Length: 474
Image 1 (cartoon, helix red, strand yellow):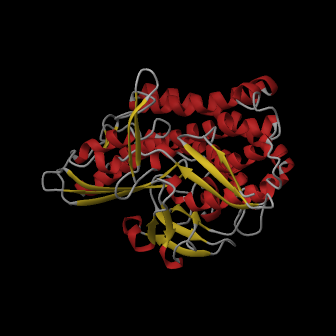
Image 2: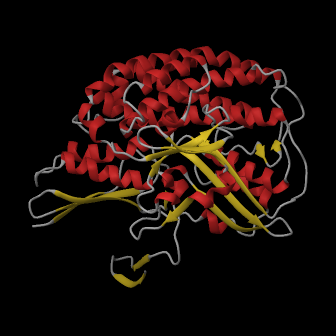
Image 3: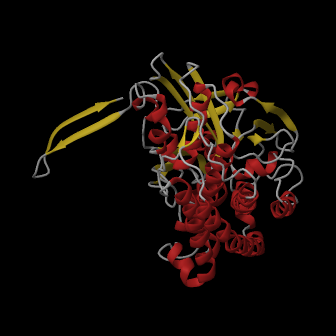
């Protein structure tokens, strides 16, 4: 008989979701779906608020990557003000964004995914966690904790606190970098550099032992998208969009992110609150694309820092053309942490980094603004419309995890069909189905949306457990 397997919740990710796997009469996987079951609604609840509150408000979307929303929202505010922010403010924003990406990648790689690499996908789930990693490879666990701390401390030194700093504002930043904090950050860099290089050596020594996972974890042709600068280098704060195909050919280049609606569409599926963006010229669902660390490694001409460029060249040798296996998101994260450390050093060395001129002041000069940057998980877009009083009338947020929605669904089906081949379902099979989602490191709190009325199921239960009333909508 046909059967449905449900994984609820998906573990070691940020947010709430489930996976359903449909088995046919022969016990073979007919279909599999990734369902995002939580709903947030920041696009609606921010309506009516002053635009200058948006960086702090949207940062509350997520406690893992608040800086990403601060950056994209503040850039949208810059656009509404129609100002060019001071050079120093831009560089300080870049440093905070780099620190955010480094700490978030460390969280994903060491805390959420390394238990599978260290303990094994088939290991006892009671030990397959960060505590198991600490026992088996304490040095690796220590490096992960230190690298996350590295990024968080930079955020705190710049913005005053590690989570939800209000330092990034429309027009620049609210305070300059002090000489004392400049020195503290500079002194942290050598230790972080040593730790990420050690981790890269370790991972390159073990990832080839996961051949089945590399071949099946969302390994298929797709487009890849991300920001690059004018020379095609990695651009995590500012830039234009480049799209490449599965063999590495550039499909579109130097696309203006503020015109994203010309080339990106957003579809909605009935079984998820996560939107499904697609590349309009290819249609839906053929316009599937991926963003994030793997995509960025595939689209760039180089990273732009010496050590990261060496690692990037080695990464590119994995596969002729674009690297298609989403298992290599993990490798790409480590390369980006290395890049972040090197790039922070470059920015700290700029002659004007301690300038006191860090904010441009103006009143709104436009009724519509768009801000785009690269978050840890990929390209992040904020789009606001305001009225003559500067109050928000309309908001659209396209989150990195949303860009990857179709790829995650296709990956879940691919993994399930490869590893689940009988009615005797083992935990290790299901862990691999979850594992393909962890490759993308989805941030589901950031990315959930709904069109029309949200389905609702409310039960009123008495003190004795009796069902007193029940209402269902949708």
